[in-house]
Length: 185
Image 1 (spheres, rainbow, N blue to C red):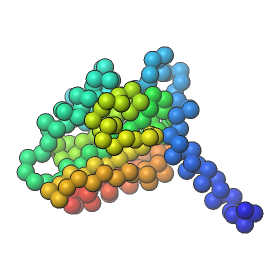
Image 2: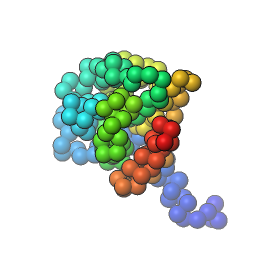
Image 3: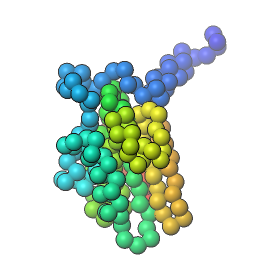
């Protein structure tokens, strides 16, 4: 154990904390209501990106059916970024979704408008009946990419995004490159 480099141990510890979901420390305890806290990263009407607003429990369920109605025409690839979280979120957990949403709004406006790319922010703890929660059974704060194409469906966790939750520019670079690759660009 003495041969391990201290930075390696620190990195391993940080990774364990991030994978645990950081549920113990809210992003901003003073700003959270007494009821369960929900993230509202943007106005779905303004951006075409699905998020939680208004009545969170019903809004997320509506997001799934609304997103299906906005599916692109033809046989192209559709990407859905899904950020799952619980009632409490630390700063990193909050940034995981906030940075994903802002990356889409800045770099994928056309794809959002066409329904080729979308973002869902789902409180899995408050909305256990949500179809995505039922299907994928998330166990912690996480960001997933659902790729739907003529060849089928692929659901993958974007665990590397956690490394960039403290730097939005690096996060946007990582996520943008990944999404362009998945869209065939």
